[in-house]
Image (tube, rainbow, N blue to C red):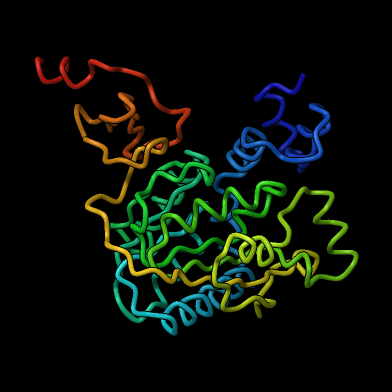
Length: 300
């Protein structure tokens, strides 16, 4: 049995953890649990890679181009990176944007969010709101962020593209930018590799089938791996929507959260979400059902 301790040792040996877990469970696709374990064990590796000058230059060019595209679409008041990882992309985007914005990020892995906060602060970004969260139940209110983008975070979720796109579109107020594997635009060898890893496909086609307005879909000028070329897909949200009164939300009901006793309480779900190491943990699985939490804390 592949215990967490054993998986950590195998990761340190350079093994592909997601592939090992799929094989052990007889699965062709990654589950949320597999993705969480694989990426949490990688925590810190993306920041460590920034010590390599070639990778640092690539990341600078990659994020400069993203920022230019964002600036060409609008002067955003708020942006969010869904699947923020260690914020090596978000920090670059914030650096290159022409104006200051309210910025947000969430990730499935607590360890990666913790590294992200450290990295952002080391780069002078102290006001970024970070939390844990799932792409399937994003802990943000409807239409709460002007521009939402991803950077290879949908990637390992092949087979679940439609559900994820609907959630991303729900929280978006104006634009959704997807920087994800360009399966349909890739060569045969790259497609075979993407298939073996269970990567996402057909984001443009699925977005259009959902009725989304796709403005652009082509290969992005920067990709770190020629066998995993990045495509950019830009989606515009047509309806004029009111901004909500809250941004962070109960992941189950998308309703406001109350901070009580250094925890976040959902009056709708009657669930308490913990704040660990200063990071709100807002996956549905993180919640503790506590119908009397408000009464007990108020009485105390």
